[in-house]
Amino acid sequence: MVATKPPPDRPIEGSAVADVVLVTGVSRYLGGRFASALSKDSGIERIIGIDVVPPPHSIGRAEFVRADIRNPMIGRIITQAKVDTVVHMNVLATPTAAGGRVSQKEINVIGTMQLLAACQKATSVKRLVVKSTAAVYGSSPRDPAMFTEDTGPKTMPTSGFGKDSVEVEGYVRGFSRRRPDAEITLLRFANVIGPGIKTAMTDYFSLPVLPVPMGFDARLQFVHEDDATAAMLLAVRGPSVQIVNIAGDGIITVSQAAAMVGRPIVPVPFGTAYLGSLVRRAGLADFSTDQLSFLSYGRGLDTTRMREVMKFTPRHTTREAFLDFADHVPPVIPGADAAASLIGRAAGSALQTASGLAGVLGRMRQVAS
Image (cartoon, rainbow, N blue to C red; front, side, top):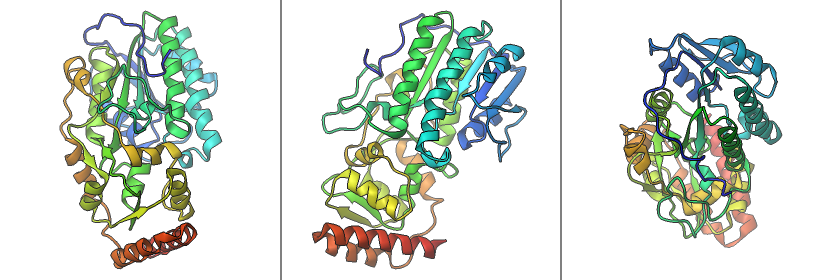
């Protein structure tokens, strides 16, 4: 079965009854924001927040339980608390957040497998909400203009967050088959952006100089962090919609985004893998090969199902979401334009460009900090 196909069709139900909600990943930014926002819903009796470290931010009235979803203990927590709704937000996008790529994959894949096994055994669980990503569609020159929820990827993600998310969705489909009585909503978010969230994309667009693949100007879609939280809230209380794309209206290009954050662009005449190595050598951004393919080819999401079935309309367009992020980005470092011009003139030699760009970006980072 194609990795992006929805679970078997089931009738769309009405508003869910969520009395006891378990949320994973509450120590991360979006997980914490969601738990705090969910706390305002007086109709929910109890909220349990799960993570391996205590949250550095408020999670509202959610009860924090220090637990690892890779451990079978998660099953006892779900059973003893009689959890009826599980919200899985603990699929990590960057290896640095997990302590390395091996830990990231274990948390994302093994953790999800253990969590869903526990949900399968717990008869109290009636709804599963999973935060997924549009990265499951991949990015390639053969992509359609807009991906619908039942469009398969032309090139499967080969590494990092995207590959893990494909496996996570596979486990969700398996859970759907084994527990046909449980409602499922799986949200495929475009890149989440805003003034508070930190991701590979926000790191990239915060660089003093933006290296981009020469000859490309990728189409980008974003969803504001406020809208991402609102969509998750609706997924808990609204209709069960299986798989749904979540993104703000419209698109912007990489060059337009660079102009909004006031960063000069340096066209780099090398493949995406080389560009990723260059950026990582400067110690400035945590990019996988698939994320760099996204910078080359971009991606567009069809959000008809979001509006017509889920009945959700984001408050921010893609441009508005990015502008809110741009308004909070530190000003460009003096001399960035001159450095970009210098590096661009050196582009005739691959080795010179790599050393020059990585070195200049590294020194600019020191100045900025």
